[in-house]
Length: 393
Ligand code: PLP
Image (tube, rainbow, N blue to C red; front, side, top):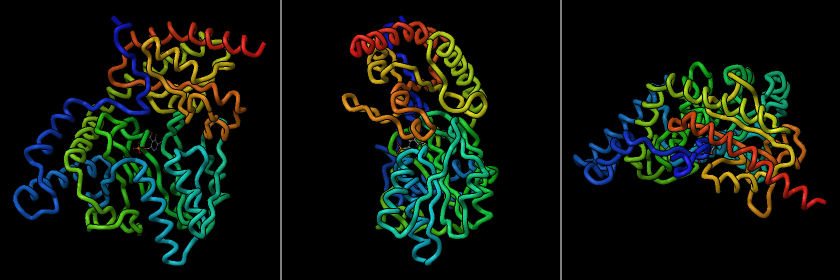
């Protein structure tokens, strides 16, 4: 039976929408389709659905509803945080540094690099250790009173490493800098209490936790001044113009609520399967090693490796043919593979960085799926290594 169905081990890329989430969204496509900005009954009904969703999310984040800004995705939240804070600082004539790391998702690192090109600011790239952690001491040394914003992701999409949020945020605040975190991979797997984390801004994307694609939010602490990236109507407290996507916002809140209610069971399930995958890959594939941090310092659902002498794209093709969806975790394009910025920053040679494999489990992943993966992987690796040896001899 297993061979007849896809084994999906790419939950860091996206997740299926929970049927309970679909059910919550459905009325807002066809029956309660009003525009929340309209004053008539249909509009008021839509507006009340959006505000209820905001309250649900705010309850989980331990913030006020007004501090939640709905966006279309995680990338938009990161852009609004960085661009908004830098432009507000330029307007006030204060500050000129943005501190972040090359291990960030491109939504942050490319945005920071673009800001340096078009605004009068300097990006300082924080160094990370071999497991991708930013040492608080390194951040303390880089901070100065001219730092506008520090942006450090809660957990890394390629290597699963979790950063010491509260400690890093407190250091930023000592220098009067804002602290933003990209929590796109963390949401649904790690606590999101913004007071405990000490962050000023936090970006989330619904499709990573069994919600719909095309919905996200940015937590913006009360008192943080941002210039909007998207201007127009006065929606979202003038921070994000555009008609609300009511069904998707309702679905996102439902998905986050379910993730919150089922947190313990989900994460225990993920950890069990993740640890089996890590032990199985390291134990059975010669030349395999874990990338990122081990144990409690990595995302519960995330296993990532480099496999000496194995070209990722070729391996992923073999796995795909065996009905297994996995990822390299990097921006490899078949034909012109580029080593991942994250692995290069961690100090891996380009050749090794091109041998990455990321396996991310989900709610529907079973022990049998892990067994099948561990059964298929050794021969797939062997085939890829043999072809490479033949090509180089
Ligand atoms: N940040 C991280 C860490 C991610 O993993 C992703 C998506 O994979 C994003 C940002 C972008 O999120 P979205 O696809 O919602 O724009």
